Image 1: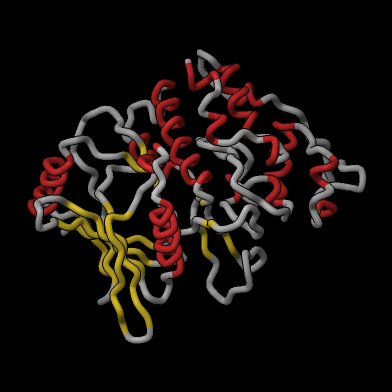
Image 2: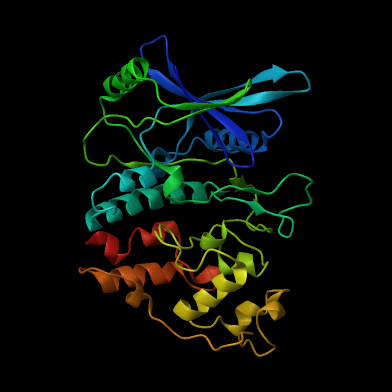
Length: 349
């Protein structure tokens, strides 16, 4: 058994690599009782998806639970999810590359698989998202401490293991037995373990989208503050209704800033131009940022910069910009669906 534990200010989650009776390995994810809302929602989303019995090919690109159960304790329970083990996250994979980046063919490969997974979720009525709350921003009234749960990003996209996954995981277990990783004992109930990466040298297997702990379903429109600021869509910043449109998929850097919503909106105007008047009229908080004519309220005028000027490299840059800008429309109804993006010329070359 290899254990790991991490804290995300919302819940403590313990992950364990277990050896099954049939000779296979499984991963166990245990949500704690006190802060178990995220894991409980993940159970709901996974159960809903399973009930649909979808034949969409994209279901292979989304992490599914092999089994779920709960451990009852006085006054509550710990929700538990059993998964097939996966490899490292894309963030870790990129950090291990000499160039600290990915080749263009790999980027297209990853994007294609992610879009298949997203289309599966969206056609099933599920939105993979993350909720953010603080003392000033909340999705609903709460007395809980502030928390942040990431949206689709490199950290919650993991590699599927190659076909010889049992051998890979056996080597991982043997290496941990021979030389245990560092650990920090916080108190008698909490120990934090360092991660150990699986040992294999193959090309990147297909990516799996996980972490549905903040997924939502059952409605066509939603409200409330979601997404960390670097990935937050304009309709969310402007407190409008939001839906399952695809916004800023796989932008590696913080394209629109990372510190506050005003900075993010200003960066959007810089790279996308001013928002349409009709779009702004949907917002009850637009006058915090714009005047009655839709002009940005700022001490200095915002410059206009083409997205292409932010990119480096050669190749089909124009097609990539067209692919990216189609997702970055101010108006969500004008953004292409994941299925439509799969047909874009940039992914076909």
